[in-house]
Image (cartoon, rainbow, N blue to C red; front, side, top):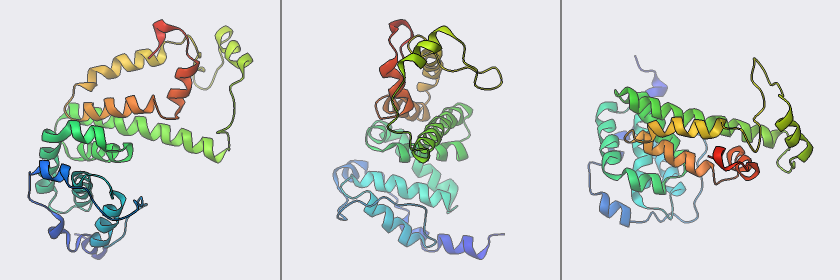
Length: 232
């Protein structure tokens, strides 16, 4: 039985379910809500939450806001089967556009929606890799901020030490040997098997590629990694 709070969180949800597949017009139409403001958390009233999301997508194609609205409806358990069909249809027809234009936050939200509701095991597996991969990076970067180590510089003597000595971490794990280690090259090879899964493999490839370019532990390690045969 639904609690009063659960009912309240979906009041008015029906008017936000847009029955359309006219994605072309929604891609051409730009949300105009002034300066974009990223949402944090959610409000109990769905009307307010979706209005807040519209401000977040200000300056971006209407289709991206529509995609976010579908995720909100699903998370608030409003006609989940029906809304999920709209969601999968959107990804079936516009996966390239969505992967190109959604930021990583919303790509992860999309992957988690597939993970929670899809019946295809391969789709769920690739989706799980997306959320695990990005959230591990989020934790690592958060710890970096908390410990105020963002300005820390690599010590060349430690890099050299890793090349010459095994440095234990825990339970048989040892530090990544910067410059020569094949761990991440092999990881990418294994991930490539899942890149072809539609559509979550496309999301996985997109977030993997972007995390090699943004200021993450992956891009920082790439800059220090010199051996071409083990580059990723």
